[in-house]
Image (tube, rainbow, N blue to C red; front, top):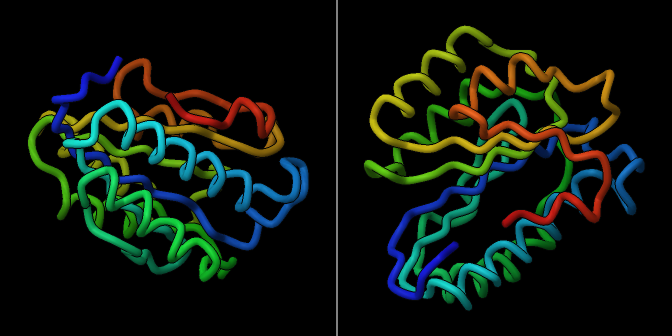
Length: 176
């Protein structure tokens, strides 16, 4: 439960690879993920306005759309950039985690949304995740898509203990 004086830093990291255009989460996985991120940021702004939220997307190359801002400003920033987010090639977790690491203080958190097919340096991604966890960063991974296509084991290895969840439908994708 968030308190109004909660000052945690959260970076939302969302997959925008071509596979995120699959329409099993209406209208598609990417848009469902963006809706979930928007609702999370708005809830954070209401419950803990002193907290900070940043947002980035990844495919082959990760992009920070905005660094951690106070939650109220992050809500506005998200709505300004949301329409510019479209699909691109492949999925590389390593590069995304490497970039997210630059914004993480001790006790920060990463919310990582992906349909789970990592085509990049898997061992490197797991090593960076381990380094982040050792520094006190909590990593929440949410796998989305067809249950058989998501690499559950890889996402579990990236996430903090007990912080991996497969999300079977768009309604359940909204984050707490």
